[in-house]
Image (cartoon, rainbow, N blue to C red; front, side):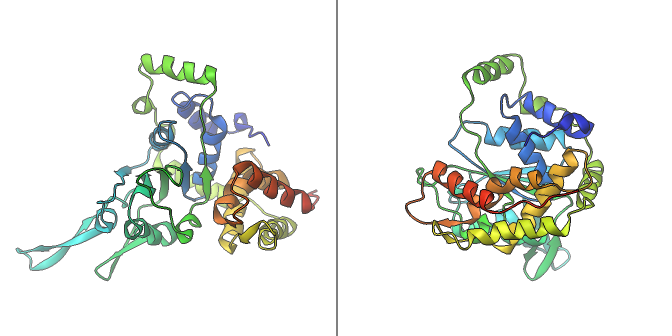
Length: 315
């Protein structure tokens, strides 16, 4: 499915502005924008140096969001993320000191270098939009998006994210190496001073909230809801998969399909909106059989599931 961003000026400008810095990765940029419009969180998984963090910073600047960035290491504590209470001797009370996560867009750089305890500090904020410190609950600003980056499993000094954490990311994306011509263009642009710091703001926070509301109003026909649920159910009964997609995956896939329809300037979802997002929304939520470790094999398995479920005819 090709996203026709020419029919949406705000989306077109955001993608164009970010693609000035990230050359040749328009599909990845579109999918990151889809997840943001769907109100979800994004996990960028790849080897170091391919532009994961640069993409996240560029997107935050284009969207005009208040953002914080934490470079995760084993000594980062949960309180660095959620905040902590500090005794104030003048008032005799405990005063809450805000953590880094209280922002619109939180960049969790190399999240899998942190300890499990610190990783889990993100869970409440990602799922419920709030953090609890010393029995007091504090809401995160809206909109709230987490873009996390991580090195591939097995890289030195990394620790796998737990399944419960992975399931809270709407998409897991891989950028990959740039094509030869794109890498040349990237180097050339950098010599001209084009970097994440040069990205222009395209929309304000209030305008983005309005766009999220528009996406939420996109109509999903009952037959398409059944199509989405059936696709997720198929992953629970496939011999290549030990643990299938959760109901949270069905909700996430529906939200992403609505965002894809909105980018196409439609107020209703079509089956291709679902198919465009299926792999990136579902694959990281699954526990695969040991013999299905190759990414190409996983693409094939999920492709077979897509082929096995008949898409409804939408009139």
